[in-house]
Length: 98
Image 1 (cartoon, rainbow, N blue to C red):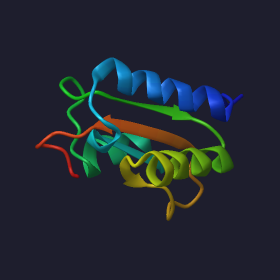
Image 2 (image 1 turned 180 degrees about the vertical axis):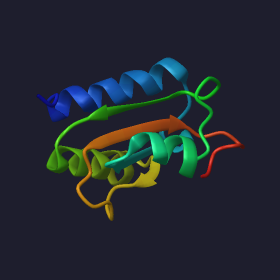
Image 3 (image 1 turned 90 degrees about the horizontal axis):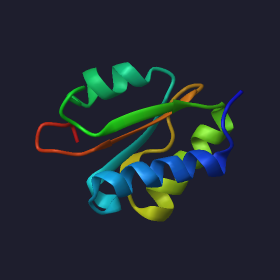
Image 4 (image 1 turned 45 degrees about the vertical axis):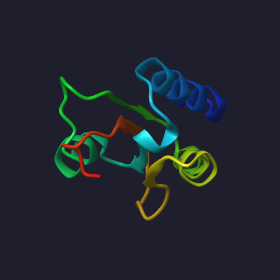
């Protein structure tokens, strides 16, 4: 069963707080394939970057994406993914894209 929307939002905020930076320093996205997005598309380093993903339902993923990107001002993409089942985040570095 997917975690509630509020619990996922709080987990993301806790992760960001733990590793620092402003919301602008973070990327939040939604996808059906988080490993491909993180490691292939965005060039996140598994062992050196701060990242995680969490599985949820499509509506919750879209709501969380909109909340972080449109309301809190993180970098990211909150739409355009067909049947998103995950929310993923990472702290941007000069090596990640973006």
